[in-house]
Amino acid sequence: MTKPIIRIKNISKSFGAVRVLDGLSIDVMPKERLALIGPSGSGKTTILRILMTLERINDGHIEIDGEQLCHMERAGQLVPADEKHLANARQKIGMVFQHFNLFPHKSVIDNITLAPILTKGVAKPIAEKRAMELLDMVGLADKAKGMPVELSGGQKQRVAIARALALQPKVMLFDEVTSALDPELVEEVLSVLWQLSTETDMTMLLVTHEMGFAHDFAHRVLFFDRGKIVEEGKPGDIFRQPKHERTQAFLKKILAAGHRI
Amino acid sequence: MEWNWAFAFAILPRLLEGAKITIVATFLGFLIAIVIGLAIALGRRSQQAWIARSVGLCADFIRGTPLLVQLYVLFFVLPNIGIVLSPLTAGVIGLGLHNATYIAEVYRAGIESISRGQWEASKACNLSIGQTWRHIIIPQAIPPMVPALANYLIAMFKETPLLSAITVYEIMGEALGAASRTYQYLEPVTMVGGFFLIISLVCAYLARVLEERVRIYQ
Image (cartoon, rainbow over all chains, first blue to last red; front, side, top):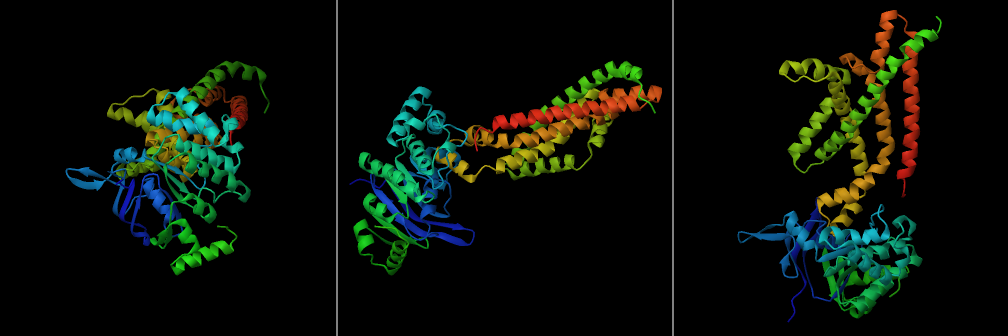
């Protein structure tokens, strides 16, 4: 019996008086691809940000690959993790952001090689060779020497995916990676994700409003509303026969807005 | 009132000597200001509340008092507690420290102009805090600061005549010395004004060139 690679146990998160996540538990199995859907403000992005250690939780525990993420053991007690523990835990996780967040003062290839060289001590030629392979995979080998400002949104996001992959994380988090793109550029980014799903067996968590893509990409879909999982199941079931009326209402709204399944 | 060329030429060598001191004081002072200014800006952002607080208080104190008063303290008061500084040293420290508190605000604005996404991407790339500052934040924060920093350089340059109050023989001190011997103020003061004007215009031009150079992106 394989163990979950991510165990989220009863976590809560508030921003001020607003409770964004409320006693949430999720297990993610290795190689599993999970789609998180739901109205904005439902807490799905916050989950990814917590896993990337960009936000701290108020309550609960998270284990990644058998190790505590937000806590560490000290004298037999679990205490909040210090920066060293967090840095260690972060190695297992990569994230791609809605707004790309490329480093604008670095060339495309330097964006990808910077972290492996600085954080893993990879020799520059080796890091560059690996970066070129990744750029090749996302179809941007010819842009290696270019600057981010010269790229379209879709190209930027493909570089951001390559940058995250360069650190060889065990879990990849995709946070609305096509939401900031012009409609005609969405496809090129989704096709890179599709390629990842068919060519690798990385564990991936995808927050998206692209329901059609979520349907094909994910093994399991979680529908969120107000910080809780309202419904979860196989994509076919969630999208074709949603049981909960809030899921039905959400999907109806999304479809009316022109998204396809 | 008539312009006396002979007098003007006679005092020119001494004014040029003074000009050298002016330029040296400006650049050394600027060097201190940009280094201490960075320290103040980073200190004010410290996670340790007491560091942020005390650095902020010191900076506000220095910014809230006139440079001339600070120069007097450095040169005439510190010897009372056994710290004797040469006029130029006291002048450069005063000029540098005073402007560091202003330049710290330039850094602050520059640092705050970097989007949160850059910090988050650095974290997602597992860079340490130090690496994030060195490789991501500072290289991006500096280019937009160049015009403001150049303005402070020019402003400091024009503040150097204050150093004559603590017997630094920069150009204004030399000019006043020449004038007080002859009671002819027209030539020395005009020449000092012309000197400052020329150097300021040259600096402003160089700053614009530099600004173009550093604008490699955006």
